[in-house]
Length: 254
Image 1 (cartoon, rainbow, N blue to C red):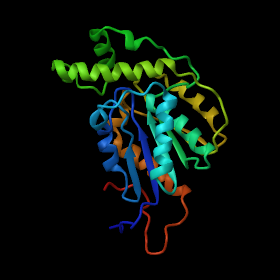
Image 2 (image 1 turned 60 degrees about the horizontal axis):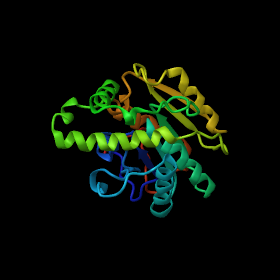
Image 3 (image 1 turned 90 degrees about the horizontal axis):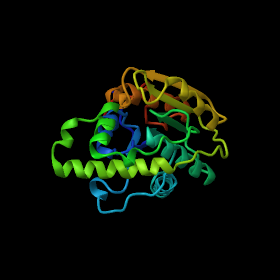
Image 4 (image 1 turned 180 degrees about the vertical axis):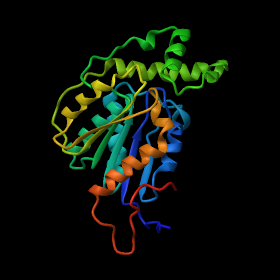
């Protein structure tokens, strides 16, 4: 049995997908080792933040996320973003770097070439079309749309996030220095695996690419494997554990 550290040695901040909430990543949080403090960003307009207005841009989401990290999180920070969250994570990393707190690692999941123009228009689809689009991506139980109240709330959140995505424009900007890891689903028809290599241009650091079985939401099905991949990579970057604390060789679930 590995002793539990008194304090976490690093933090992992997760940025969810469009329409997503922190609850979707509970399995991933639970799969991370005890030495890694893992938290998920809760975007405005959902869950306990339901009374707050939706964000108007990826930049706004990133600025708020970076502000929270700078204010509340000490020590090394790694970022993980899925789908829309990959763009939030990238822009958050850039803000942190400009403040002298560049993340020790950036993990980007379920998103292709960031410089590709946004497809746009999904937020203008009819309710039926939008539901079909969401369900085709996988990872969403169609039954949540059976209840009228839940359907209205879910579609409002999804439309707001897709509207934000439609306005995003990638800029090359100053390159990061941290390692970047990209994760993709082999059967994700919305993100060609080959397009993911374009993420290598956002950093001077190392670039790695991992493909998992599954559709767009493979990350929810492979939470344990992804938690292990992230924690193992982080351990190789962190300084030795302080005396009296023993670091696990691989990520072990809490």
